Image (cartoon, rainbow, N blue to C red; front, side, top):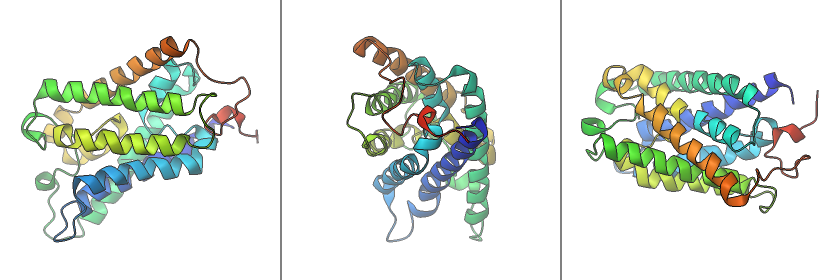
Length: 250
């Protein structure tokens, strides 16, 4: 598949993740009487990845996350030469999705980006549970590593075919259940960047952690999986739709 097609798929998938995941937090989590709460937000993020991984995994590999791209490069599942293009596309898509969410949210006359937090990630006084920098750092590193381990393992040639997106979506739900009280759940630098642009101030000041920690976690998983299994776990000719190199050329 041509790079342009793959980047378009990454844009759509990342846009969907940020719009529906962050949208569930901004618009629906605390809605009077019938709010979906943290459990609903966790499920929303998991469902965004599950649905788009099935829809577009065969086109781009369904990264939708700079940390996933880095982890797959280090696990020798993805060509390093395309990584920057993927990451830039993911960030642009996240900002675009946050812009659409901003337009929707501000349609309510008393909505305030600053007061709502706009689903931005933070630590210290900006952590939902008041967790400090070290707790936030450890949470994001460890849970991103676990998430990447699921992604790499579920798309291994030896894994059951066709179930990768389901395992990945459930894993993202799980890490959100754990990390929302600590950092508002990043695990994805692009997802963090989109809302931070609109919140500004403290959100931009703390954004560094939500780039550094997920990428460190992804790197740990990328190297660890190869060490544990002894190889990259990918076929020369892919047997799973999660490898975009198996898609027909156009």
